[in-house]
Length: 152
Ligand SMILES: [Zn+2]
Image (cartoon, rainbow, N blue to C red; front, top):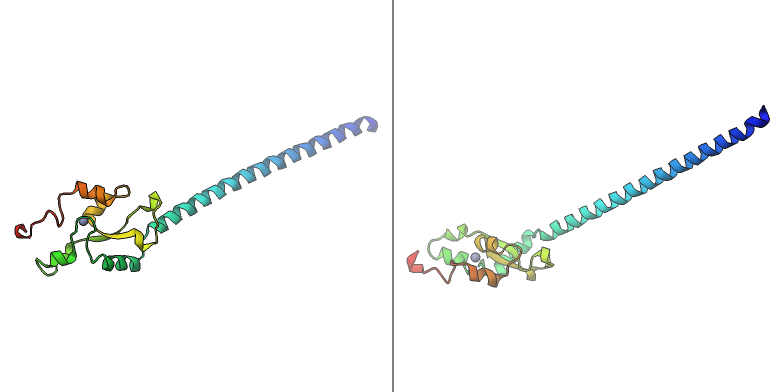
């Protein structure tokens, strides 16, 4: 009886060991795939954060650019001084923004003040992330070149 049972037990032990090995391998494979996916998600997240960070303009840079450009829109030419010349304080209604001359999405530098310019909100909306100053100039019918001070 024992002579007959012994090989059966051996086969069962080997079969169990084999199944265990397969289970461990499958688990290792899943763990590897999961970790790889997590790494990819993390890389993607870091990339998004870097781009978002590069798009943000520091307050000090903004102030520098406004002063360098004399609070004047580099496309339409509207300036705080020009508006203030009609009535003191009117220039405060000119909403000026710091714009990336070449957008970060198109490879422009995100933190170099040489890639920043002062624009009024109206021109900046038209420029968006794709157009150049020249293209916006061809689109607009407002600004210094169009306004006659006598008409205002
Ligand atoms: Zn403008």
